[in-house]
Image 1 (cartoon, rainbow, N blue to C red):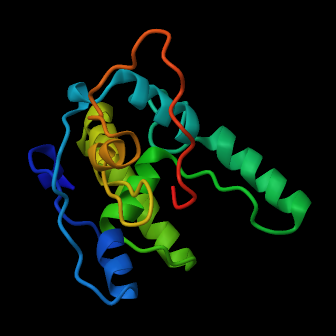
Image 2 (image 1 turned 120 degrees about the vertical axis):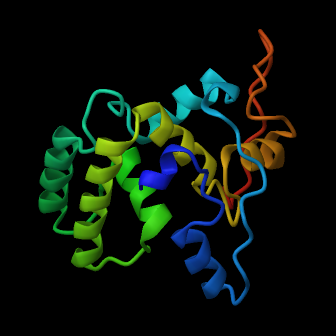
Image 3 (image 1 turned 90 degrees about the vertical axis):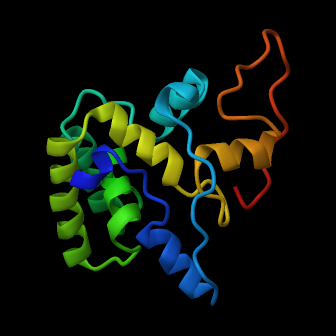
Length: 170
C-alpha cells in the first residue's frame, strides 16, 4: 500500500485473475488519468453510483452494512453488498473475486491500511483508473474512449443529448 503514494499500479490481481480465466496474459493499464484530469461529472457519477459517503467515512460505511445485512436477512440470501470504494479497490488491487470469508477479512485489513496511508483523493484516483468498466475494459479513460469516443476529461456540452445507451457488456 505504501508504494501507492507515488506509484500507479499497472496490473491488478483482478486483471490477472480474469486473464487466467480467459487463458490469456493480463495486459497492463495503458492510460492513467490524474484525479484532476478526470471530469468532475464522471467523478460525481461514480460517487453517486458506488459510494456516495466515500469522502465522509473512514473506509467502511456502517449504515450501508447495516442496511445490507437487514435486506439480506429479509430475503434469506445475499442480494445487496455494502463494499465501499476503498474496499472494492483493495479487492481489485490485491485479492480475488472469491466469496471466501477469509478474503473479505483480508480486504478489510487492506482497506484500513489504505485509509491510514493514502489521502481519499488518491484512493479515488486509483479506483477510477483500475476498476473494470466492462469486459476487459480497465480504467476510466479506456471506458470513456470505448463507450463515448471521448476522453474522461471531456466536459459535456451544454444542452447536449444524453449519450446512447451502453452496450450490454457494460
